[in-house]
Image 1: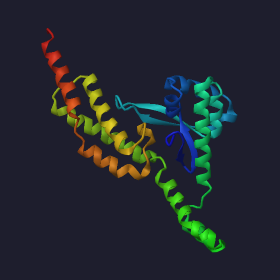
Image 2: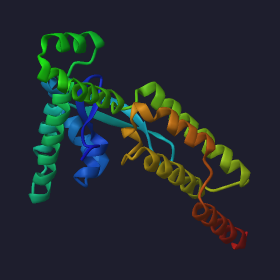
Image 3: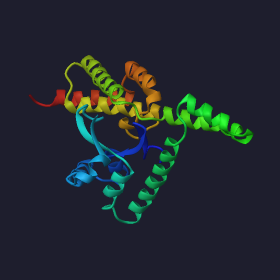
Image 4: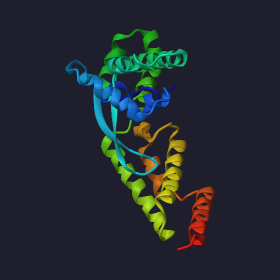
Length: 232
């Protein structure tokens, strides 16, 4: 549930990609539904359109981030017992994130809180500071850093692909699948668009050092052998 709602520009939001994954919908269908909602001018402040890099082919595709109101409108059309369960999880996640935003975030605010508080409040200050630190560290990675990671992923895949000589698009897709799977695993996220700001350098180091797994290398070799055996 930790990935359902994230912090972006000091606001609790979720993404169309995350909604599609959670509710088991096609992302293009979720985008189409949002497009319909945006025809009403009163909904436009609820959604923000950006792009993300597809983990399979390295291409850019649209993604929408939405606040609680935007999610509520979008999820109205999702019905059934399973959908209700997911909606309740989202409500809980939004409530948690919105409470975190209310916590003091600057040293001055924290100091003023400490001066006004009694001894009991002072004992809880460490907990408040810990929550603030957790909030900052778990903010989604900003667009410039995300774009830098995406470019480096493409570069690293091309570097490794070059060592195999000529490879097919399908074989290149296996390399993207391998490196993106590793990124998600070390960062403990379900999608690359959910990477946290604090993990930027760790992920960049991983990309720089990445080599495909033995399984991926085997798949590429087997595919190449089959292609070599096919008649010209």
